[in-house]
Length: 518
Image (cartoon, rainbow, N blue to C red; front, side, top):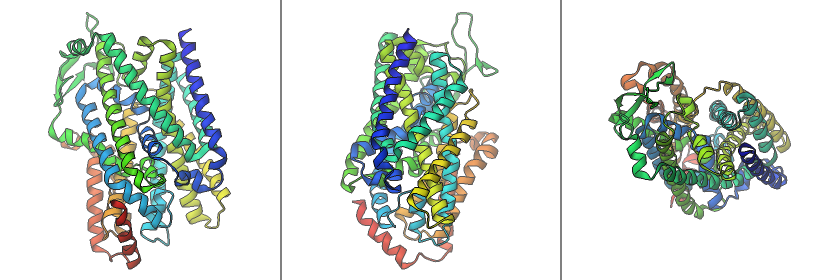
């Protein structure tokens, strides 16, 4: 009966989401600008909340609490601090300049559009590279969302992971077909509200259930490194499954050190914000330049509450259900475990809808942006320059389905770790687009050749570092975003200085964009 009530509550929520899609469907399908960027009509609340909700995804409610449950406070908290700092700085220095510059540079409505127009390309090399990297990394990102859906429903109702994952894929594709960017942004706003409600509700309930903050600390203080910012807990596992002592307690080995280099590496998560298209597009889509300050405050407060609530949920989960989740993958279900055990069924259903909300708000963003990158920038920008709006949107929907299929194939492994998948895609965007976005907005001397070299270097280095260098360990075991971001920046500077200065037209536009910084 409890499971049925949870399911009905979640179904009602999803019906509301579909209603939003239908409401905006007509407007979205008027033209490609409305479909891909909402006609630049987002208000400050929708821009801020949709940016953060689509960015955080199910990772916020499953991945981050799972890290805290498994390793303790250090890894999760330093990640949260880096992300919060990145959120604030991105809204502070990038949002206004990008909003204005994207209008000045040919009224750009996608990130590849903007970068190509910024350097006055004729043969669209930057546009092609940018679109292809978006396609690759958003496919990986979408896979993480599909894993979340599969884990959520298989954990809650005992359904087949694969059937639920595929059902989630179908739902997201249909929803994105209907309403495009505007419907996605408005529903993301609602989902951002549900996500923060879910986190605060389960945080307060679990603390009360555990007997208060003092009781929580008492239950986990003896786990080596669990509450240390400069150490990390080390579960004792056999074939990936944590051992249980004769008393029924989970077994931990001696804590590992969490040194300065590791902290800097973890804080570098914040660098990813400068390159993630789902956030940058909100900067471009807001209706008034003057409303970005308000959006910045809303986004920063939302992130601060949500991120640290998610970390605390993981810690409290280990105190209240210490031996229930014995693999790193299972640990990502701690939010579900707390909700279903501590809340009334209807409220649990609403909280579970928070996870579904986070997943949908992200996956529809990823599919739409990736599809628009291919249809708008490669199909119309290169292959068929006289393509009509209708043709562009049709191609976009075909690409959307193909991306969803590939993402579903990646997500077939039910033991996939959401945090790991997201961290790789996040590094990909951060290193590929972060440096060139900053240099394009703030350094007039940046050249087209520097942009191309920097993007290729950043994107390729993420793969090289993750697959070949990081496994060496030691000082090389840092998060791939940091070295890839730094190397990409260095390449942009060197190549730009070695190549011809930008044209007077490019320099003039750059100076015009400066007025949007204040």
